[in-house]
Image: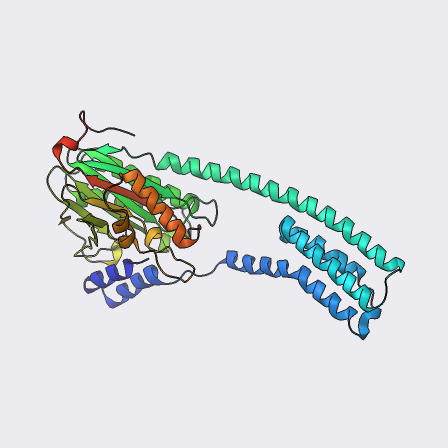
Length: 410
């Protein structure tokens, strides 16, 4: 993920050469294709089988080998297409089979024979049966997928509760988008809490997906929601989250060997009080974006630190939070790497600073996040390759702009 390699470079002086190489391998190595990749290749090959059969029939019929009876082979074309290509693919495959049958009958001067008409009748019956069966299978799969998605969304909504629209000196908006590649729940997390120390926000990304990631998200958010009210030091809040995650990993059988060896969580905690500025503790997460005077700038960490779960790779961790300007009228965006790693058809990354500058500080947080969502969809062609979570905070320009009565939920 962008930003992690740079973080490794900043931490490297505190590591041994072997530790630095291990961290770079964990954070920067490409994903190793698993069984899912092999299954996709096999499925693609199966989709090609009907058309390969049709091609083979055409070759046989247009060569001296046309004495071979190919009727059953053509009949199998729409039947096989119905299994892997859906109703539309079945129709296309059947049309191809009919075209080949008519072409070969003309070439071999076989019109008027019982064999030709039997072939057309068989093709028609198999096509109708295949189309109906494929349509029924497609509708059933869609119902099952919709149910799984509803369950996944419900599970995520339980963990990621809505963020109040107004907290202390801030107007706040949140957005969580699931990747379009499936119905599995991701590991993105966010939260914003009003405390006696100010508004404290967290955004993070657990490596992996599914129930393992959801458990880790719940543990981190639970620790954060508790610690923000009792720890005055922002670094200690992060340490409490890291300690809770370490305890969770010791539960026998709760996590697989891969998670225990290579699992990590990037996290960023921000604190905004009535005093000017924002305090940050960043553990391997993409830096927040500050919009000031219409210009967007990244609040990079001066001393990069490793993600949660990789503390054993460093000899010392940050002892205090870093301070950055955050004036009235400014806008602060916290986000996960799914935003900046979103690619278009040419492989170009999403230009988040330019998108934020284009939106400006005029629209409210909720509307601005929706505009960012639409910009992401346009950039990626409608499909996100990774989950996305964002927190957008606007500092009130004047004291009179604050709602009376404290925080307002919405």
